[in-house]
Image (cartoon, rainbow, N blue to C red):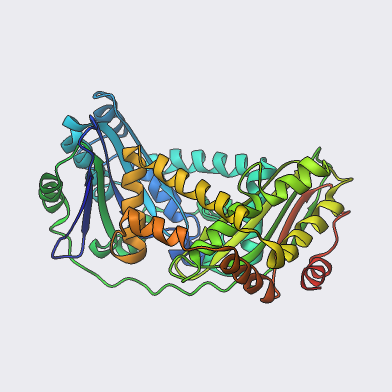
Length: 420
């Protein structure tokens, strides 16, 4: 399997990975623009724009777009994250040309029909309502906003309802003009594809675009704080976060291994201590999040109102303990989980295309699999404990709680306990 990279004169990057045994292919366009690239008055527009791409182009109606891919047995999808928006399709290898034609069409030529805007506005408002009615979903938005207050990086990707209700065709066109320049477009493909053909197709679709300046992005600043929403729910939802490493930091793999050791599976510290030994909760996990200039290690747990106080104290106690007694066996297990997850994901052309685009966006190159595995292997118990000490030594945390959570200690009490 060979990764190949080509840059069009206008800055569009084309990256492919041929998988000779595959009869299918995933192709897409990854745009390095997401929620954090919105101004306050634009909050939610990147996600709304992603929806509108499927609502018709100059060449195809919304139904035409769906039928073009599904008539050949494929599927088409998209997503918006804080730093990227992706439009992609998976099809049989013989239909790769069609897939890239459809994807380029919806990215470059959306018509933003006012009638379709109103239809999709209603869909997104329903999506926002669904998120608000899902405690173990909305609490992560609240945690992000609490950790990064008054910043684009802290705002919800869906946006507030009042913003979504106000977006117009001109707003979509303005965001595209600002953020969808050729230097921000990555065409990625993996599976049974031919690199030279994908490059030719990309040149035909995107080669005419003119480079244009992009607005500066405000650096993220983790400030921390507490949000507590007391409500008579059946379960108390607890999230706690510390600022971690961005994906260009030297210790980013220490951060990922640390998260796996703390709460990445049934053998992890938090699962064993909180659930298996003390029965404080049903669900508890840790997840790392790395971005261009910051990162966040997040703990989530769902418990009862009676147990929320003990659970919160246990989490900070385990953080503190991890700076002193992390074992090589724990680290070896966490590294094995990471490597196995990485290697198993690469059996899918969709995962490979996603990886190509993501790594290219981060480093402007695609590190080899061997390089990535070597960096994971280089992590040790000592380097992880050093990383944990830096997290805790920063002295800032963020916490969001929802439900019968009045029994949990305030954040300042927990952070004092963490530093003790």
